[in-house]
Length: 93
Image 1 (cartoon, one colour):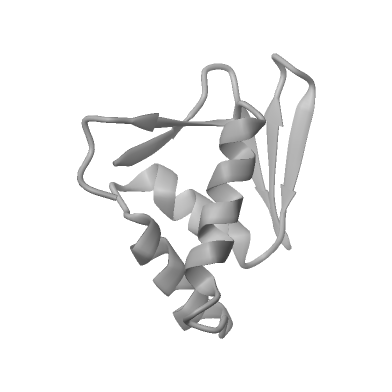
Image 2 (cartoon, rainbow, N blue to C red):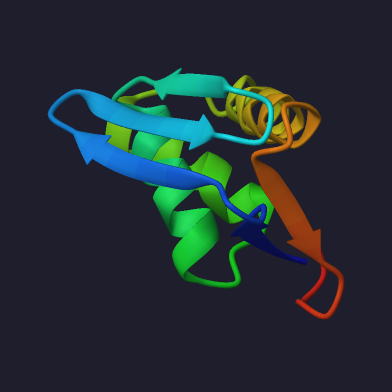
């Protein structure tokens, strides 16, 4: 499964993370340093949630058992706020 920004959503990397803004509902997400590269990787390539979790483990020392839940929570929050959409044509999740 591949991920993309929802229509009209913009994001900006900043020194300590990233800001994601949805003008349609005036919501924003302030992503911290571990979440920002996971978010960017999911947008830039056809990454699975498991591969994104591996980024947290390898790059930020997150517990391997906790990382998949953290990625799922990030994706769920961004989907619910209308910031992230899935393209069904991508590979398996």
